[in-house]
Amino acid sequence: MKSNLSRRDAIKTLGASAATLSTALTNEAMAAEPLKLKGNIKHSVSRWCYASIPFEELCQASKDMGIESIELTGPKEWEIMKKYGLTSAMGWADPWPEKTGLTSFLNNPKNHDAIYKCYEELLPQAQAAGVTNVICFSGNRNGLGDYQGLLNCQKGVKRLIPLAEKYGVTLTMELLSSRASHPDYQCDNIEWGAVLCEMVGSEKFKMLYDIYHMQSMSGDHIRNIQRYGKYISHYHTGGHPGRNEIDETQEIYYPAIVKAIVATGYKGYIGQEFVPKAKDKAGMLESLKKCVLICDV
Image (cartoon, rainbow, N blue to C red; front, side, top):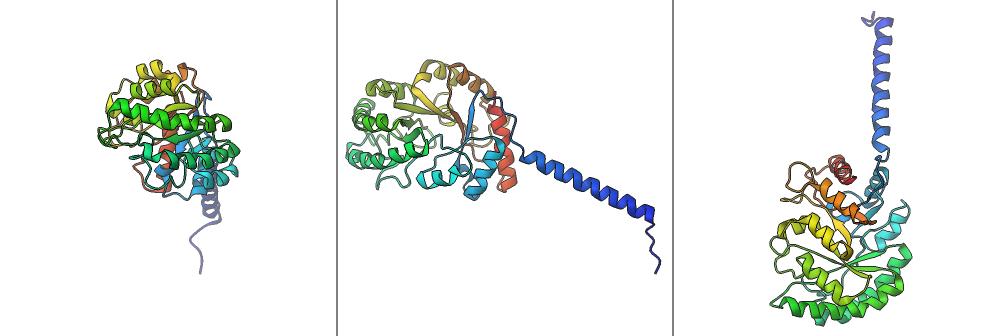
């Protein structure tokens, strides 16, 4: 049977296919190139926001973007991250001591022995992995007044400071919203956190300023950063309300906030801790890339 496709038509078809393939390969190569980051801030991503992506795939994707850290990770993950040249900007224990965590931690003296034992094991591991910040929490008030909570936390943290100084790790207490996400949490404003830092009196104890949570409590981020930046060792992002992408769909203007952070002389990381609206891997990573660029001032 005689074909209706002439040699000329065949050549055109092959040429078009080759062009399409070339474009696809070029796009794929471009997608794999690291982002052209300005270098004024270091970028990190919180593991839990991308829990549906296999860990090593997230490691590779982060490296491809120029992200240097996957945080809220523990010693087992640190070992894997070494293969990709990544660090953890904020480490944690996995697991935490029994009966401790966000709701019951340093403001309850009954937890101090278990917390000390946990960090006694964790901090040498952090030093060995090059992890210089490890998270901690106040715990919920449970009827405890702010002053007594300060005294209890001071006692617990001061017990840990010799370990932190020995291993070169900064204990970093997270500021969380008690109005919405974490009802009754005690360390819910930067003023309380700054007082605790003064009471502890060590450069190895500072605050994690979570912009999403502090928007819920009071906002006023730029003045907070200017006034209290010396007490802050790490920052988290998150769109508000909803904790989604930090773009024009929400009420916080991140470029101005990050510029204020850079202006303080901060040399640490900005940790992306928003929850992507997309549920597929490609969409989630595209959102991550977009939000890293928003913060790359």
